[in-house]
Length: 275
Ligand code: OGA
Ligand code: MN
Image (cartoon, rainbow, N blue to C red):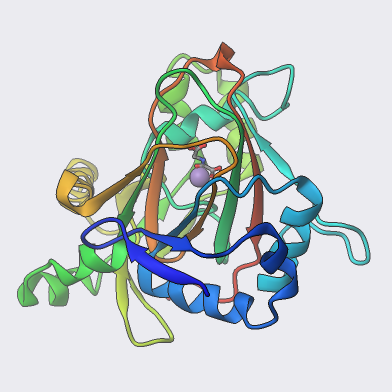
């Protein structure tokens, strides 16, 4: 029987007692997983060794998978910094900074599944922090004040941190790839819970002086990601981690781009706009 063991104070839990065979055959597992995912922010399945076919099939049991043309198997996205393995290797360095996947999309993905195929010798841990705990930690007065703020998110900001000397053409291409998006700072979820929408994509606060807004965003991110709020996953080969992309920030600890680290990702289509 599947059981859940908490790993961190406010985020992260390990699922035990689920083997490869149950993953696809246990009909009650997907709904149970989504429930415990919402409760824990990130779920760790150690040493499952799923292949791409199983990852696709299990992802589809959880929800519609992002990027799947109808009737075709959903894509597996290779998360690697090796340009010979992925055309996106360069921009994936943005994952070294705290972020929500697709924060500059209309509706960010609901959850992400990442399975470990090749590990780096050092670094490459993935860290998670709860955006719900970040909100709960605010004082009542802050909750009231920040509840009114709106924040401009840009893909360009994370890319500029990776490549500060980018040309005007590159910057224009990033903006075209992912146009800016304005989100409320406080996300009022359908469940009634509130979370903070922060991360590297958050560029400025609307109606606030640029520097003042950036200082506020930096302070809130620092408070939300203090070590006591973070679960740091030290990957073992074959691990599968699922995170609730609506409720956690995550980042990868730096690793050598030539290490061969290779993770396979599927993203579940989002069903809740940030509002
Ligand atoms: C991602 C991501 C972190 C990692 O795939 O969206 O942020 O540790 N990955 O590779
Ligand atoms: Mn990510």
